[in-house]
Figure 1 (cartoon, rainbow, N blue to C red):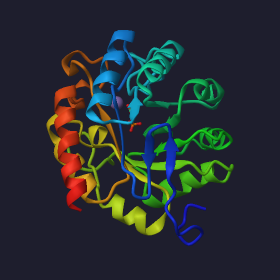
Figure 2: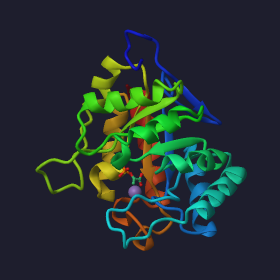
Figure 3: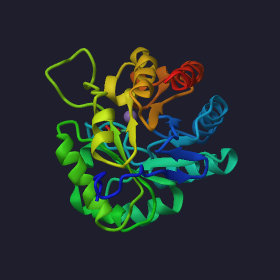
Amino acid sequence: VASKETKPEPTVVQIRDLKIGGSHVGVIAGPCSVESEEQILQVARQVKAAGATGLRGGAFKPRTSPYSFQGMKEEGLKLLALAREETGLAVVTEVMTPEHVDMLCQYADVLQIGARNMQNYHLLQAVGETRTPVLLKRGPSASIEEFLLAAEYILDQGNQQVMLCERGVRTFETHTRFTLPLATVPYLHERTHLPVVIDPSHGTGIASLVPPMCAAAIAAGCDGLILEVHPDPSRAMSDGAQSLTPEVFADTMETCRKVAAAI
Ligand code: PEP
Ligand code: MN
């Protein structure tokens, strides 16, 4: 169903002002985790002012260690909805289990499937049964073939609003958190009509590398970016090292606009 042979024209996912696919490039920005009302409202205003049309923020966090902050859960979802009310940004947030899908749909505009859950087939089917758009992240050790087949699990249930997100894969390399393969963008565009979103935050793990990788992803033809932005990255409860300040995010948006105009 994801193949271009089935449907040659690009799929465009549109929710509020967030448009991703075809000739539209959408930017989703916000903190790794929702931490407080003040934090999420502040960053939502800042990323909106810089031109983002989507707000990211994790309320249910899939942390590597069970002892790390696990997210604000439903309280965090309520704060995301509050930020949407004020800014109009489309809310993108992760769903970790099929039992939570209905609850998440009450608050989210886009359901994010995290990298760790790319092959959680019951979860894929559960989000496939909804008509809420899905951002499917590539598993860090998944082949492109496995990634596309994971998307089929969602499409097969009737939900056609699927975005594919490259967020880096695990390699022998250690200078970055993951290795971010940008060839994924043109390759997937040859294979599928589904939009391709790049996550340079998790893809590099290092804030200074994020702006140039955003520019490169735009140059490669991506349909969207998802970026971690925190009002004070040094105090972030998760992923501070890869989070941009709102100021750097605004500069990055400016550079991306120039690259987009040049290609
Ligand atoms: C996230 O977006 O904060 C996240 C946990 O991403 P990933 O699933 O790609 O690791
Ligand atoms: Mn994160």
